[in-house]
Image (cartoon, rainbow, N blue to C red; front, side, top):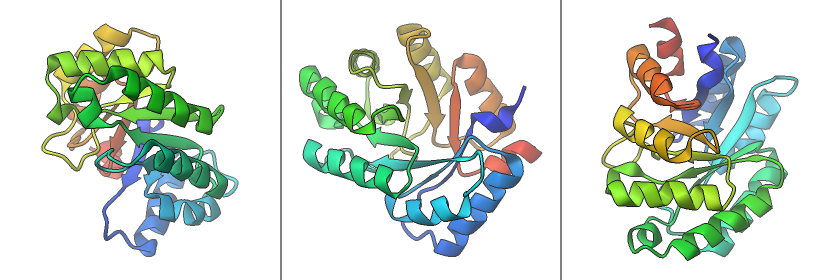
Amino acid sequence: MEYNKYIDHTLLRADATAKEIVKLCQEARIHNFMSVCVNPDYVPLCKKQLANSKVKICTVIGFPLGSNTTKTKIKETIDAIKNGAQEIDMVVNISWLKAKQLTDVVNEIKLVKKACGSLILKVIVETALLNRVDKINACKCVMAAKADFIKTSTGFSSGGATVADVKLFKKCVGNKISIKASGGIKTRQDMLALIKAGANRIGTSRGIALMQD
C-alpha cells in the first residue's frame, strides 16, 4: 500500500517561515505525498515550488476557530483557489454545531462547496470540542452539504484524531464521503490504526517520520 498517498504534509504554525515552507514542498516532492497543507498566504509560494509536480496544494479556511462569517469563508476560498489552492480544508462553525443550528451549518458548507467548484472540500469539525451527538450531527451535515471529506481536527485545539472518532465517522458516513484524520498523529502505528479505522487521508506535520518509522 502506498501510505505516502494518504498524507497531507502539513505546516500550519503561525510562525512558519518561507524557508520552512520551501522545505515542506521539497519533502513532499521527494516522498510524493498527496498534498502539502499550508496557511493561505503561502499558497502562491507552494504553487511555484510544486510546479510540474503531482503533489497538490491544500489550504485552510476559517482556521483555526471556524468563527469567521460565511461571507469571509467564501471570499477566503475564492482567493485561495485563485492563488493556486487545489484542495480546501474549512473549519465548521463549531458554536452552530453545538447549538444544533444544523440548517445554518449545512448552508454554510454548501456555499463554500459551491465556491470550490470541482475541487475537494474537507470540513474540519474539531472533535475534541464535540460530544457523541455533535459528532453524529456533524457527519449528517457534511453529507447533506455534499462536501467531500469530514476531518477530525485542526491540530490546534485540546485534542486531535482518535481511532474511536474515525470509527464513529465511518459508521455514520460509510462510503458516501471520505474521512481525514489529523492532529496528534505521531507514529506510523498511529497512522496505520487510523487508516484501518476508516481514514482516507492523514493530516500530519510528521510525514517524513511516519514514512521512515
